[in-house]
Each structure stands twice: as structure tokens, then as C-alpha cells.
Amino acid sequence: MKKFLYVVLILFVLTGAALGAASWWIMQKMGPATWVELAEENWNCRAEVGDAKLNLLTNPATLKFINVRLAPRDLEVAKAYAERTPLAEGSAVVVIPELTLSVKLDDLINRRLFVEHVGIVSPSVTEIQDDEGKSTLEALFKKPGSTEAVAATPKTEPLPPKVESQASEEPAPAFTYAVSSATIEKGQFNITTGTTQVSIRDLDFKLTGIDVDKADLANHNRIQAVLNTTIDVTGMARIDGAMRPAELAHLVVSGTGDIRPINPKTLEWKPFSQLSLTLAKGSVLGGFMTIGEAAGKELRKLQEYGVDLSPIIIGGPLMQDAVVSGDFANDLFITRSLTQFVFPEYEVAIEPKSWVNAAKDRHEINLRLSTGPELQTRLSNGIAQAKLGESIARALTKSLSDSQGRMTFDIESSGSLSDPKVKPKTERVLKNLMSGEGLGDLLQGLLKKL
Image (cartoon, rainbow, N blue to C red; front, top):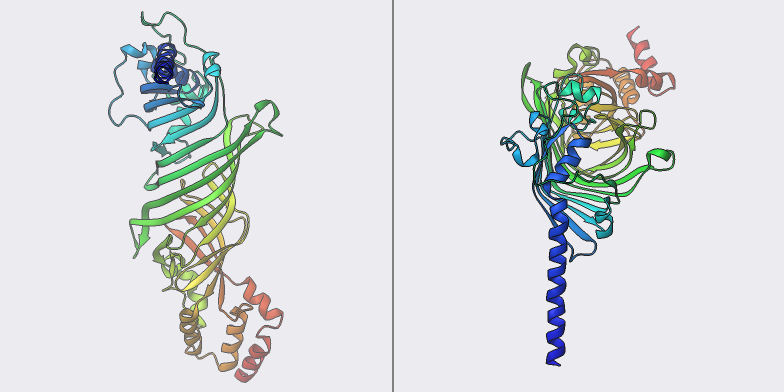
């Protein structure tokens, strides 16, 4: 029995040694330089990989990359990888401390990178967008040599010749590749557009059902996504008549998405996502200015009837979870269905086809504000004190009320998110009067004034 166990132990040791030797041999052929060259042949970037390790003891095998960094393309890409000056601290716009690929060994040996799973841990991404929406990341992932790539990096050749080091006697292998699923853990994205900054942190993101085939996009152009993250938006906003730094939004988000990654017309990677998101209770939307600061003279007509919306704060903390469904592409989010937000003093229902582009600091939202009890009392007292007469005051209240008896106001908000233009709309009030809501009281009040 002891001899049998001894033989088994030897077999384990020999197997481990064989796998270790195989890993060493494969990584001699596919070390960091190979993967850097593969990245730079496909993307308009300069890449750097701290280390690459292959573990054959797992099933499937795992290929792990340590300290992956991508930076704007520069003249160093013309040199052999071992002869390059290291990237300067802070120059990389994409930093991935750990990236793991689950692969089959026979695929790897035969230059096929059919990845069962991609795991990305604690990535940090920095993006800057100009006034036209052009992104530093967009230039980074263009095909080298393309018109867009050359325009983005004029100081580099489209496809610079490489000086091969003596240690590299064989050309770098060309791969065919596909991915079945992917996850991001604890991601950090920072996007800057002018004075507006979007910080996406603690991002946990899972992609499954990856089915993409450029030859048949009608049937194979889909990815399913699940995400959890916290988003903070800061920028300059008009507060007390002056532009000041402000928190525009603080969102705790979870949700799912159905993504069409490739544009069928241009065949470019331009993801279009149908999203269903939940903004958790306690998330903050706006809350830094009042309707009076945003609407100005637009409120005067309402104030003549004792309806003073000017001190009402726009937005604030959510008092309960809010479900948002919409389409997202090119930084533009468009609502698909009615969206309800419950704030401390009122509820807001946002109409379908309202849109927000946080990166460009633009929006156009049609909403209905329904008062809570305290605000309802305050506005009712204002109408009563306007000396319109009891009948006219009652008619106005009825015409403003919804089916639940709450005063409601239709409002249009547009322009800059940090300095919105707010305009009350009267179409529904007139429609209510014409359909008889308060019409009798209004006529009675007018007759009394004759």
C-alpha cells in the first residue's frame, strides 16, 4: 500500500512538472510581447503588460495578465517591446491590474483564442470628451492606419515597422478569437466633458449570451448584461444667480441590458442598449436649485393666480426605488416608458421619449409634477389668498388636479443639465376646463364679477 501511494505521489509530481514545463514552453512563445503586439495591430494604442501566466491545472486553463495598461499610440510602438521606454506614470488611460482568460489549451496552441470567460478585476478607465462628443477612448480603439487613427495620432506612422529583438526569431502568432462571457469587478470609470465630470465606481458588470457574427448580424448581434454601480455627476451649476460647483447626481444603480454591439449599417462597434435600471432609494437627482431660479419670468402668470412654484427645489433624494427603462447609445439615453420619481415634496412622472446626454450636459424632459400633502396645502393657501373669489379659486384648483385630487403641473425642462430652462405648460389645464373640470365654478365666479 505504501508503495502504491508512493507511486501515485510520484505521478502527481511528474504531472505537475510536465504541466509546469508545458506552461513555460507556451509562455516562451506567448509572453507579454506577443499580446502587446496583438493589441497594437488591432487598436490605435500603445500597450504594456507587466506579466503573463498560464495555469494548466484549472479546467479550462487560465491565462492571467498582470498590470495591463493602454495609452495613446506613440513612437515607441516602432521598437521591439523589450527595448521600449516604460510608460510614464499616469499616462495610461486604461489600467487593468488583473485580467484572466479561461481558455482551452488545444485552442491556444493552435492560435485560436476561444475564450470561455474573461474576468477583469479593478479596471480604471479615464476618458475625456470634447465639445463635439469625440472621445479619447474612441481614438484609442480605432484600427491602426485608418483615417481616424492617423488624425487622432498624427505624430506616429500608421503601421510603423518593428525592429525585432534577437530573442524573437518567429513572427508573432495571428489569432482567431471569440468570447462566451465576461465580468468586470470593482471597475472605475472617469469621464470629463468640459466642466462636467462623471465618476462610475464599484462597477460590477456581467456579459453573457455573447452572440456576434458580422456575417449574419440580423440573427447574431446580441449581448446580455447585468450591472451594479454607483454614479456621481459633478459640474458647474447656476446657484443663487451664479455658476458654482455642484453635485448634479448621485445614483446607486442596478439593472439589466440587451445590447446590440455592432451597427448593422456601418459594421462599426457602436453599442445600442435597451436598458431596465433601478435607481435605489436615497439616490439624488438634482436638488441644487429651485424652479424659480430655472424658470424665472415663466412663472409670473401662475403667480398672478396665487400659484407660486418658485421656492420648490428641483429634484433631491429619492424616497423610494425608481425603475427606468430606455435606450442608450452614443452617450444619449431616451426613456421608453413613463418613469416615476418620488421626491420629498412631490412626485414626478417623466414622459416617454424624454432624453438626457450627461456627457454633453444636455437634456429635454417633459414631466408632470404632482404635489405631496404639505406642498398641496401651501399652494391651496396661495390660491385662496390671491383674492380671485371663491368660485374662480375652486375652478382653478379643479383644473389643476389629477384623478387623485392632487395638484399637478406639466413642465418642460431643456438645455443644460447644470443650468436647465424650465417652462410650465398649460395645455392640460385648458383641456380640463373645456371638458368641464371646474368650468361651472369658473363661469359662476366670472358672473359674480360682472
